[in-house]
Amino acid sequence: MNKITDSHPLHLLNEFLRIMENTEKSDHPLVNYDEDIDELWLVLDRDPGNFSAEQFDKVYQKCEEEGIHIGFTNAKIEFWLLLHLPEIEDYDKKELLENKNVNKNKRYI
Image (cartoon, rainbow, N blue to C red; front, side, top):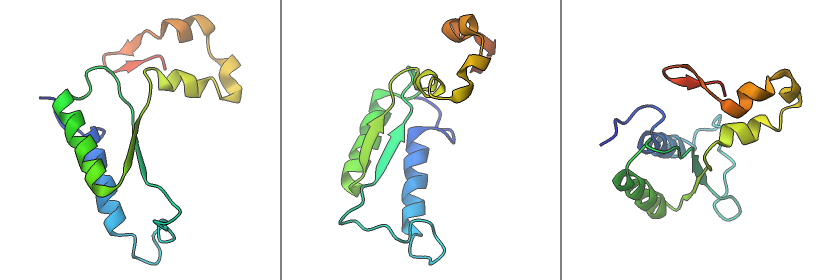
């Protein structure tokens, strides 16, 4: 079983639900949420190996129970987002395409 970290989908879902419980406070940014016209979406970055099928099922089931839509990014969403930056020309094209590890936990992009 994968370790549940701050960026793990189960943790993010629980934090999302905790925040929604506190929306009644007048200074909360979601105080104007209207369930008749607004939709809640939890969008998760789904990279290979970041959580198990059982954990996926648990997140999906809990989202269904809470009335939250769930979406997953495609692999390499970071690259797709990067392509929309005006400064894309500042990056080395060869390094972008290779996207090698710059250290044990991070790639070039």
